[in-house]
Image 1 (tube, rainbow, N blue to C red):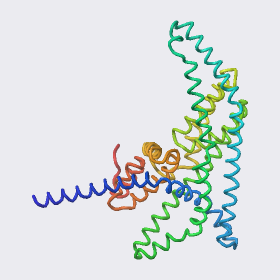
Image 2: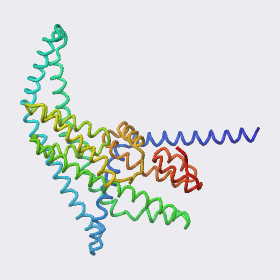
Image 3: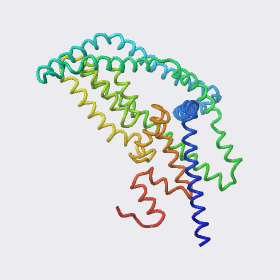
Image 4: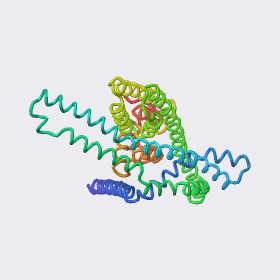
Length: 366
């Protein structure tokens, strides 16, 4: 009896400790987001620049110079993209009066249709005024956020400094492991670090190529259909596709709405919606498995939860950053003797069956 009570107390203590640890990590992520977001962005960008920096170092360039050259290339590319986006947003904002005029005319026709077919309803609800007022507020708020300089400039300005130091001191984790752990522990920790680096690098490189391919396909579609600012909207679609599930929906609503307000026929907006939808199907079912593959090996439900939780804690940045972070968490769980069963909730069903077969020599029935 005493042994059962002692065992129960131990399990309760372990459960309380783990619950407290999870709550502490969530609080740390939320309270430290102003530091963690730019730091993790810099870490991910460092993984992208690491191959170029290593290439330059193998050409006998000193590490500081190799990093500076890599950063210069990175700054030029990002600066050009930001300049182009800002310029296009300014141009679109200049055409807002004509767009709102078309919206007002469309809503006026809708109001006349409602009044002629549903008498009395048009007088009770000022649909036109309400929708124009809300539409103007939403669009102006969106443009204001795109052109706001405060926190965005702070994050962008500090990125090169963080990236430089991360690349320059990239050997420190290995040195720490060698000093902190014994020989057996060193091998396991180095293996864990290598797997995490491999997952992040593979995920980022695949995502980069997928974004470029998305941009090219969407630009071709919009250009053929004669949509104004096709280059801007294709880039907008490619960037929003970095946010799983939610990003493409938001981008499609914006682009189809713009096509409705700038084209006289409903055929063009319908073609935009249909062709972009087909392009998205091809991207998600053909190109994403090929380019990104199972780099993170996270199931769709875990990805969806990471997007939701990331958005709650870190906003838009959390929707993008939490997916590779969850991939690293999954690797850590798999390498732990006591926590590896919990990795089942993050991985796929087939992966769980394979692991069970390797460990027990039997396969799981569905």
